Image (cartoon, rainbow, N blue to C red; front, side):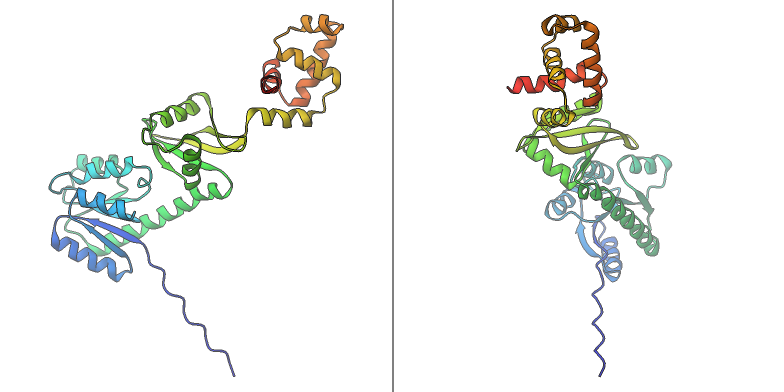
Length: 305
């Protein structure tokens, strides 16, 4: 007696598509075609309804009419891309406008593609499937950073968050609280871009570190987030692993208090040359290159005490 063949797994739903168009016949035609391909379809007849749909459930892609009563499609697309939690959704424009300036405006607004009316359904479906696959791969790649214990942000030319990974969002809320007014957040991130790093306090003796990584795409920069030990804890670990001799510890202590090599020599009863030799060993053990860096490590402990 043979085992019965396992039941086939249910087919995966391709995704949720929001269709925004004020023409009933276009909506009907697209809804039928998308449903036959297995998509879940949401419908909006203007920009206001489209934003309401986004508030309820973020779709995987948008088919957007460029010309509608009230707010036109280009303006709506800009609003979607300005919201960090929606900015990743690919927008494909549907338009009878085929002039170069209008096509350029669509891409400038944040659209990934456009199809010209009257619509050719096979072309619409092919383009939609391609952009959904690309968006899925991009999302997986970015969220993989979260799996590695890191978070990532993309900032636009104005310093606004264009995209943030789920882990980055959680850490920002923990470190900086709810961002009803994003001015403080933008200032903190701008510090990271300009100075290479910015820190904000987290719980349990940790800090949230924002590190500038460079360009992340056209007009965007990338910032990496990760929790690090607070300054005093990091200094403790660094010093405990450095295995300084008692004499080197004394030299470092006086260095942190702003004393020169000659001052330290007078205080400890040794020659400035010997002090310099001790400092060379201290720098090597701490993994730093300057007296300023060594003093900063020791100073954090002095301030804690």
